[in-house]
Image (cartoon, rainbow, N blue to C red; front, side):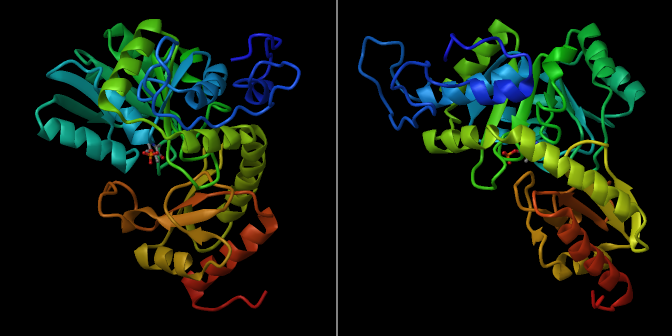
Amino acid sequence: MDTDQPASTSLETALITSGRPPREPGAPLSPPVTFASTFVQGGERAYARAGQPTWDAFEDVVGALEGGRSLAFASGLAALGAVLELVPPDGVVVAPRVGYSGTRTVLEAGVDGGRYTARFVGGSDLAAVRDAVSGADLVWVETPTNPMLETVDLEAVIGAAHGAQALVAVDATFASPMRIRPLELGADLAMHSATKIMSGHSDLLMGVVSTASADLHQRLADIRTRTGGVAGPMETWLALRGLRTLAVRLDRAESSAGWLAERLGGHPSVVRVRYPGFGAMIAVEVADATAADSVVDAVRLWVPATSLGGVESSLERRRSWPDESPDVPDGLLRLSVGLESPEDLWSDLAAALELSRTGIVDPV
Ligand SMILES: *Cc1c(COP(=O)(O)O)cnc(C)c1O
C-alpha cells in the first residue's frame, strides 16, 4: 500500500511496516476495515468477491514476509481448494501420506470424484518422493507435518518436482513465514492456514497462498473470484492485527516449547517427544489412548481443544478424531504452546502426566 516506506531488511520490520495506509498527515496508522460488497463504478474495484481493501493490507504483509504476492482465502482448506483447481483434468497430485487430515480428506474426495489421481508418499522419504513425481502436475508438501512434526528437505523435493515439471505447493502452517519461506527455496506456492499462528488468537478462520509468479497469482485470483471462497473483511482485519505480533508471539511460544520438549523427554510417562527444534508445536506420545485421554482430562491450564497456534496453550489426542491417519500413534498428544508462563504450563502438564501413569495426584 504505502510505497514511501524504506525497504525493510528484516521480517520483523516488514511485519510492522507493510500493509499500512500512506504515511500522510492525519492518516490513520492502522488500515480501516472496509465493509463493502460493491464499489462505485469507474474505479479499480467493482465487486468485493474479486478484491477489497482490507484483503490488500493483509496480503501486503504476508507477501512481504514470503517474498511474493499473496491471496487471502476464507480458510486454509479454501486456499487448498483453489490450488487444486490449478491441476488439469485427470492430472496427478503427489501429497503426504500422513499430514493434516483435512488435506487428505479433500484429496481423497477429488480422487473419488474422478477429478485427479493422487500418489500419497512419506513426505520425508526422498526416494519415494522422487519416484512419485514423474508425470505429476502438483506436488503438495507439508512441513513440519501435522501432527507428526516431520520436516521435509524442501530444496530436494522442489528440485525433484521441478525436474518433472510439476508445480510445488508448500503448506508451512506449523512454521509460519518467520521460520520457513518456501518461495525463497524455489517453491511455486506457499500456503498457510492463517487460522493458526499467523492470526494467533483462536478467533477466526482464514487461509493464504503466496507466489512469486505473476501468472500463478492471476490464475489463483481468478479461481478465488470464480469459486467465491473469500474471507470476510472483519476476519481479515483481525488476522492482520494478529499478524503484527507474529514475531514476538512465535519467539516466546517457541522458547517455551523448546523448554517443555526437553522436560517432557525426561518424564517417566512419556514414550517419545517429537519437536522439530523450532515453532510452537510438540507431539508427545504416552503409553496408549487411555493414558493420553487421561492427560487431556486432567490438565487445568492447557485447554482441551483442536486447532493450534493461539495465545492459549491447547492439546488434544489426535486419534480421538476418526479421520486421523492410523499411522498416527493412538497415544499421541498434539500440544500447541501458547504464551502463558512456561513454568505454569509445565507444572500443569507434569501433574496430568503423573496422574495418567500412577493414578496419583501430585500434591505440588
Ligand atoms: C488447520 C490446518 C489446515 C486447514 O486450515 P483451516 O484454516 O482449518 O481450513 C491446513 N494445513 C494445516 C497444516 C493445518 O494445521
